Image: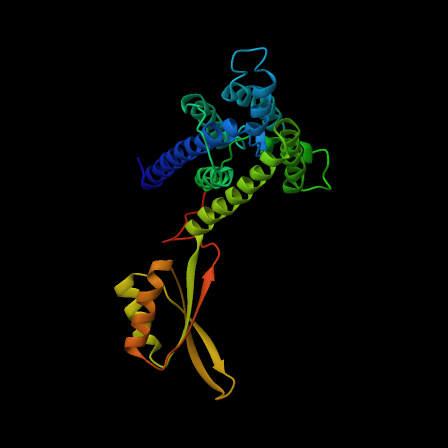
Length: 295
């Protein structure tokens, strides 16, 4: 077995673990917070909460959320496979199955919440962390994401995010009509917190720092960073417009926790060095996030 295959297997194993943990957290937010309180936050799980409410008089306890989630996703996956192929829905199919199982395993029980705002915050944070872990693997939990992609095939002048706003908005409005405007407003708070936490998870895993260093001792500084921190450094030719002299500017990308040692190295060698530190939104390559190529 070659090293590339071993790395690929480790990467897939890590992705599977993140998807399992993430979908379990999302299921906790649905079964422990949203469903008991009647907070419909959009998505297939939100629609499943409405279905459970309407069928509670026909079936004891109503149609389980996990069952509705499974049934609704089946035609969506068939449509996605026909449009995009099996390769496109691979991880998402796994994530959807994990989410369905998690909804089945995590018990749904009524907790006597005294503070709906606190419940919305708790659900939003837990769900946001879970979705962030799923999305970082380039997968989704299916549902309205797939539906938006299918609809966009026939309404090309709209983007998938624009369609998702309409679709999820319609589900939230349905929840407002069923459970009342008060709970719908708390659901909106939960959705907002959910998206912010999810973005923080994704950005936190991808953010790095960029250091631009201008110093007459650039060779010594570069050598120290290269061999002490084992980080690459690039020299860029520059010209000081005031002095009209040629200078060498060092360009270095490091993780957030490594920027402090870089500054210390520079200041210890040249206290007159000019340093600019900025955020890098996403860095791919050796030492950072590896390129993903689905097979």
